[in-house]
Image (tube, rainbow, N blue to C red; front, side, top):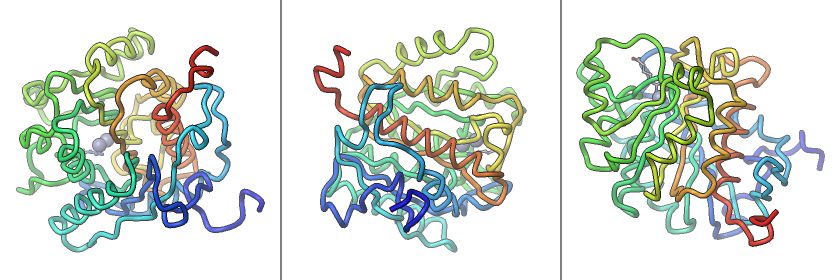
Length: 307
Ligand SMILES: N=C(N)NCCCC(=O)O
Ligand SMILES: [Zn+2]
Ligand SMILES: [Zn+2]
């Protein structure tokens, strides 16, 4: 079958119902009822799958076959109520929990960043508090919007309040742009996050950022949440709340490759909004981000480690 033909699963992987069990499920969460600005991330999973057809089985940058070293399958989408945010959040948590019966780990494709909260609730039920490594232009530790506590700008405040995160090991990477006030940063630190800003990355370089991330996370169980708007709008225009001055996709992929020996227990890639995308730029970047995550999660054989 030519790679551009046929129904799109992520990277042309088998569906979970074709293999029964898997080490890792890639699952779509087509929900965008938590956005504060441009909508459309509900179409993210289908768009990222469509743009992932060109991914190939061997990843030379990590010297690993991400789909050979482990069983990865596409679990389809978690069906969520687009009209009721509370119900949607409950459905995502229940869906992740149910999926966890058939797979060891989940990599979710959003959807807006709201989905990180129910995903972290499900991860916490299995692992206890986890280090959250959060790539984003935005802190997403704001309190409420229009009085609402659960939105795409608030998942990590709720997660911290609920005790879902390891407050000694969590970190944001790529933060930039205007805030509401200086208090935002004080609140964020109190909620348990260290920060590598986009400017830090520019000034200190990627290697220094990697060293800071690794020192912060250590050997804690690690959840990686990637808002595609961490990338500069030149690299990822198709997103809901773009901010100038972001990472290149090359920088983000390099950082992810440096995390392969950490204890990654789950991940999400969120905020791809296809109506604002051009030539699949954002979706190709997101598909490679997922591919690099799956590669980092793959077990290494002794020969691969020696090589
Ligand atoms: N894109 C995410 N997740 N959050 C952005 C929230 C920015 C705001 O509306 O204040
Ligand atoms: Zn963001
Ligand atoms: Zn976000």
